[in-house]
Length: 355
Ligand code: GDD
Ligand code: MG
Image (cartoon, rainbow, N blue to C red):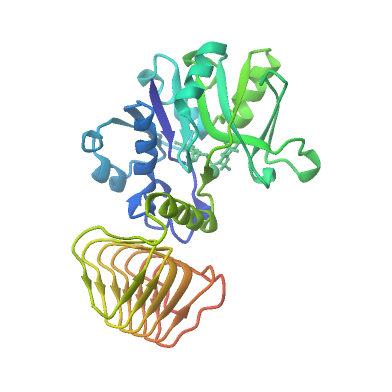
């Protein structure tokens, strides 16, 4: 079976992290998010992957190429203008001839996709939609099903008064190719609004596939942060420290896991790193700095005696001596934090700013 990953549209809510980088390339455990999605598909024996994108992305293409370095066949399907979730799939129609999987490009899950594909083959609907329970369904697409798991109703981004179930569209579909005859070509068309509800009205069967295993979307910096932490705890032992390549760690530095440290880092004397911590390649952690609960992208310089705690810092930032960045701050690329600066809680700093 082939899969198509939707990696276009706007990524506004993940700003300031996505100014210079597509959402799909945002690093998670020092690897592009998309690499985790591709690995997930591979685990379920899907090696033909189409990437539907709004614009050609050199960053994505330079990293993944034709996919051979990742043991998949990767094809790019580029839209002249955003076509919406369904329009983007229709745009790749010539690449799709049999039943296929669609994945939103901003979710990660441990859903048993193999079991879901088998369920779809058994029930033979035009579409099967994975459904996951969430605490706040109002920011997702709510999907009501009957006792046999047949979808009865869709409400995209409902008000609380309209919420009848906490089961939402998890952004993973198994679809029959004839669904594309319900999608206009070269027109903005979304599955959620323009395809699934009209199919129900026509009496076509759509099934829900409820599951309870891990599921998260990286729609906001908070969730992006949580995903990094969750995966770190899953892949790295509770107190383990993984050095991904050669780095200098001063003997007096203390590193407490779980932590991942990219290659070519320089961890100076008397610094303290406390997990969960993800430090990208080429970072410098200065003398006496304390770094705890961070996601640090590549080539950041953290000067002497800085305090970092529970924050996300994108690439090429400079954090000046004795400054403090605590409690859910998010810094875009190339931010310069001045000596002694104390950022307010939850600050969101745009790329290239000096604060
Ligand atoms: N190629 C392409 N072109 N991709 C697109 C386009 C487009 O025009 N528009 C959106 N996408 C991609 C996004 O990059 C994302 O990976 C996915 O389609 C879903 O779009 P979002 O903009 O993230 O939608 P959402 O998160 O508000 O809602 C969707 O996902 C929820 C689950 O996370 C809906 O499918 C909801 O029903 C669902 O609950
Ligand atoms: Mg989303």
